[in-house]
Every structure is written in C-alpha cells, then in structure tokens.
Length: 366
Ligand SMILES: [Mn+2]
Figure 1 (cartoon, rainbow, N blue to C red):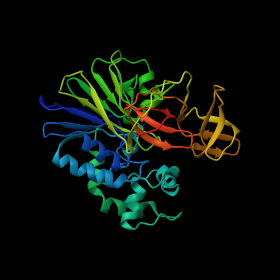
Figure 2: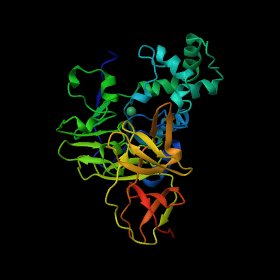
Figure 3: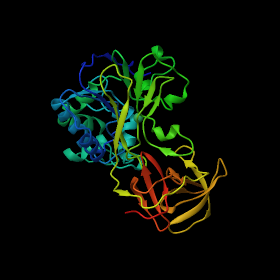
C-alpha cells in the first residue's frame, strides 16, 4: 500500500470554459497543436488529467512547458501513474525504488528515455549498469527540485461542485484505496459504476472501449456520468490528443476537439461503409501470419479467427508469438469533399481518419 489518495476540493470560476486534457505523454507537439486550436481566453480553465510525461519523446520539455503554462493561465493538474516520479518522503527528489533502477537501465521499456532518463542526460549523469542510486538521487534532486515539487503538488483527484477530475478512475471501494488505485484504474468505464457528479478520466485509450471501429473521440456516457478522454496520442499510430470542452461551469453540454499531426486532404469520390470490419487492439493483438508480404501481410486474429490484411510494418514480436500494432480493415463511409487526415498512404489506398474514426479510403484525394 502506497500513500493514500490525495483529494482536493476546488471551486471553478463561473465564467469561462473548463477544458480537460489528459495523457499528453511527453508529446509537446500534440499539446502545442491542441492548445493552438482552442483559442484560449483568460477566463478558461485548463484541467490536465494526468500522464503528462513518459512514452512520448519530450517528457522533460513537456513538464517545463506546463510549469510555464500554469503561470500564464488558470491550470489544474491531477497526477497520473506515469507522472509519479517524486519521493513521497522528500518531494523535491526522485523516487528510487528498485524498479526505478531497472527502468532507467531498460531505456524506458523500449519507448525511449522517460522523464528521469532525460533529466540524467541533461545533467550528464551517466546511467552505467553499476550507477549509484544515492548519487542519482542527489544529482537529480539538486538540479530538478522545482520539477519534482511541481509533480508532488498534484492531487490524484480534484472534486468540484459538478465534476470530478481523475487520471484512471474512481475505484469501487474508493474509501479503502490508495492513490495508485485512482491513477491506474484500468478499463474504468467497463466496471459498471455510476456517479452523481460527472467523472472525467483519462488513462485508458478510448479506442479500447469500442469494438468494430477505431474511434478516438471522447466517450461521453450519460448513464454512468463518466467521460473518458484519452485519445491515445503517441501510443497509437493514428492516435490524437483530445480536449473535452465544458462551455461553462455546471454545464453538461460537452463538446470536444482534438489535434493530430496528419496532413488534411479532401476526398474526391464517394465510398460506402464496409460491411465487416475488425479493430485489432492492444491486449488482444496476437495474430497468425498467413502470407507475409513486403507492404501488406494477410493475418488471422488468433482469438476470433478473423482474417484481414495489415501493414507488415505493424507486425512485431517473434519467437512463436506475433502481435501487431492497433489496426483496422474498416472501410469508411465518405462523401466527395469530406476532409480526412492521412495516416498512411499505401499502394492500395489510404489509411485515413474522418472525424476521429480511422479506416481505409480507396479512392483519390484532392
Ligand atoms: Mn495512465
């Protein structure tokens, strides 16, 4: 059991929008792109629902960008499981559990250097296999006290009059749960919970809540009063960074926008929706290769037996078990003039996104 959950009660101003963003994951490009689309005014409140860092390329720069942003704009932050790098006892220093050492030496589990490794690089602390944890702690504590303090200032949950902001979710037996359980509350929307106030959460990429198509827009469930907003930026090849826009405090009239970096083009010819489709997703992505090609491979999804062609570069693994990046064979319904963003241009057609939904388009683009 780690530290108990830190819960903060806050008042939101009457005027201005409340804009929730989660799971930036060190992707400053997406964050800047999204903020650029929001036309922020001084009356708006930004709420960052955790996982500001890790997995993406610029954890340290993203953290510093947010530290500056909070001086210019009204910002609230809740801590995510990927942001929990400070020492509970000495919040201006990095945590130093055994897993930290393994994590640093593993180069961020294959995703590239995370926050602590980027800090080490900046101060020239070499991560040799025999590096000294005490020296690590002192070096980073001295150079990044402000950054650790910023992370340590974040509660795991912010409750306002009408909304609750949290990274993972509110666990069923919340009163007996530690802080970690609120941050890493996997698959929150599928736990059958209902709330009186709106709970706005990140952590679980929303595409995972959908079955047949890959839809990265926020999921708004009026029955349970949960809004899930993680668009899977960085983690998914076709992911996006969502912003949930509450027009004013107390409103349930949710809107949203998002940013992704893909070039926007216009569709020339109409295309009808495909009849069958699958969305092969992380956690359920074991495939059997039927025919390996250079660009596309024919595979069978092991659990369902569904067969589809996927981009060969999306395959990974080996030694018996082959998996693939999230992918779909969904054929999007499109009309001439529709705007799409192009994720992949292939010899067969385009993998595009239309209004947050990913799929294939086999016609020409303007
Ligand atoms: Mn998370």
